[in-house]
Length: 256
Image (tube, rainbow, N blue to C red; front, top):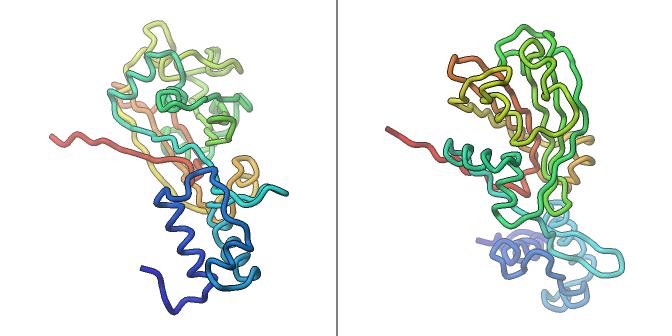
């Protein structure tokens, strides 16, 4: 329900926001001009600009110099987390996230930003079950969908388990690291039996804002995913930084 006691610029913003969220104003749609909006709402261009500024801060609108103001187009990738889904996607030989995006009709790619050995950060050491500062291999990646940066993902792997393998090298690994983990001739040779995810919502840092093109006011989800193999060992921790305006997370839990 709109707040009738709110200032007019907020009521205008609420009305336009409702039109965007309902789909009446679809992604990529051009908004009426400031003159048209001031006439529609019986106000001034200054008030209209304040309303549009609020919606830009919410990440709902973008300005295109000389062309107008548009509803921000963004692919919303639904990340479906189930064991069966993981196996089906992995068997395509394409990274799981890319497979999810492609299956939903998007163009997906990933870039390897760095592969190096570092002392493990404390928050990752706890999840890997190793001492803080122990050597780990880190694979830094950035995922894109339809050319838009979608998430940064840092993968951590115990150096004593993965040194000398494809994990320590820069080229992409067909099917992802999970395929290598389960490979009968690989370094682990065990089946992944469980993923544990911890989700933290916070505002992005200036660096994350720039790298992932995050609009003002949009929070970021930091997702830690730990991969457990049959022996109980954690062999991979993924630290993903995900802008909250372009993903839908869906978890399916079978309850016995």
